[in-house]
Length: 232
Image (tube, rainbow, N blue to C red; front, side, top):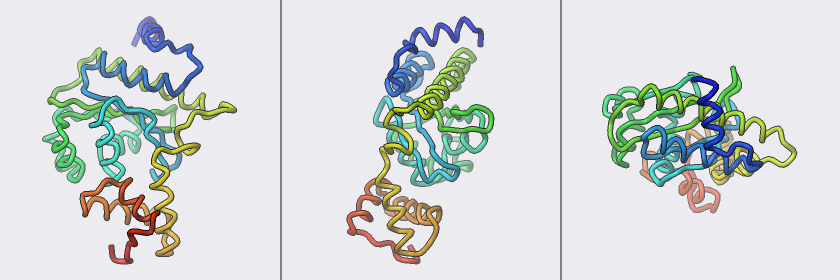
């Protein structure tokens, strides 16, 4: 990517704005415009095992479904991109069944045909992912891939700069839009005397087995309307 293109993207984003949350929303919107994708989302992570993460922004309902699905089954392009520290590109989701069996079937049912995920990272520091999807199969062109990588880099620095600020935006661990999942994880940890990691896996398994959104299962647990037995 040329320096000129980077400047052009920053100009399109109005990157001088002092509202990082708005900047991340514009990154997602610009991805849709420039990369010919159906939707985009930015997920911010706050720890090493994925138990704390926040959906910072999403352009469409399907992006919300993809986020919930990845958190529920613990697999998918965003999970893989964060683990690998590099882009994960699936131009035809129909061929990804063996790679992400639980994610693929449900994503296809939601109308997703292609997925592309880019880690938000600087070196070994990984703070989230930029996840894109299409409702028809097809690869990103070289120009689209270049722009997506550049926009992921811009989003990375926006998140890192904000987390270091005295008044951070309401994403990440400071105000997680999925806080109920963490509350439920704490409840199950105490009830079953297991680790936070194992508690989250237990909640995910229940959500997947019962085809219920992870947030809804978590609300039931926090409201004491659902108790996960040791064998669930």
